[in-house]
Amino acid sequence: MKILILHQHFNTPQKGGAIRSYYLAKSLIDRGLEVIIITAHNEVTYKKEDVEGIEVHYLPVAYDNRFGFSARSWSFIKYVNGAISLAKQFHDVDYCYAISVPLTVGLAAMRIKARYKIPYIFEVGDLWPEAPIQMGFVKNYFFQQALYALEKRIYKSAHSIVALSPAIQFAIEEKVPDKQVHLITNMADCDFYFPESKKPELENKYNVQNKFVVSYIGAIGVANGLDYFLMCARESRKRELPIHFFLCGDGAELDRLKKSAHQHELNNLTFLPFTNREGVREIMNVTDASFICYKSVPVLETGSPNKYFDGLAAGKMIIVNFGGWIKEEIGEKNCGVYVNPLEPVDFVRKIFPILESKELQEQMGRNARALAEHNYSREKLANKFANIFLSQS
Image 1 (tube, rainbow, N blue to C red):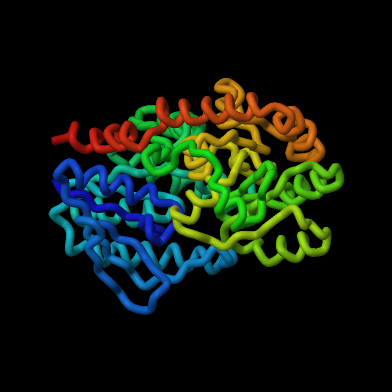
Image 2 (tube, one colour):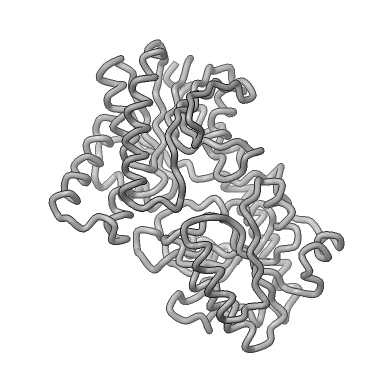
């Protein structure tokens, strides 16, 4: 069986960033399937590579988190056109697996289906166009309705759909109740991340000896609402709590947040550059709590952020400032806390008893790791994903 994967933002472990599509492709390769990926990169020429048995085609389509809405849209359209054109080389594949976001990748999947009679499975990581509409990026009513119509058309035309969270699965099933929707969240790599004692050399490197470390690791964009993270650092500094904050990543908001931290003299906050997963594991070693931060926009509560699953696998307590399924899960499993996104002082209230109790810290860490192993291990979810295709043969 041969599978064509469309994913504009394919990454490898060496490069860093979200590597879900790498894991998915490897799960198919490991079971004897042939996998071709059409992705994009910021170089000026087309490139083809063999990545551990995966045939990867890189289209020259620039993209950056700092792009505005128009530049992003143009990048998405260029990728769609390039993927459709390149796909003519692979008209003998059995299935196309189209990974959103953005929603526009569904246009490529539908055109490939029409032109080459290749059925597609559509993966939904975020609810588009609901996300940009609720974020205020798409304000024109008629354009909104056109995007909603496109979303439903893509769902209806798909062979089946993969949702990355229970909330996304529910939303899709309401729109297309007759369509099969598989739930396959992001994965916890329990073989790569694992609970371990803090290494003194790393505590020295990051200058966090005798500190409770709260880390945000991920995209630094508008949707992440990281002003709140800075306000938590500010409230902690006011009360002279033994907490140090790490903000690790890159994105459109980075320079502004650095300026804000400097203005407020947040000497308990360190900005760390974007790094690959080896670097993330190093930061995780000295981390006590993994913070997941979003703006107070309802649709953002439905997502499946990689940093949640990395934190669980590493056995770290989770802190969230949004509602939805993750808030409910960490409360039910007692592996983290919810803090009010409108009151940074709530962070102080919630974190204080944890600072006072090493036993409570350790219990939450154990619960986090148990949740990762039981519900989200890469091996279990990779098997579930591969069976979507193997059950068709």
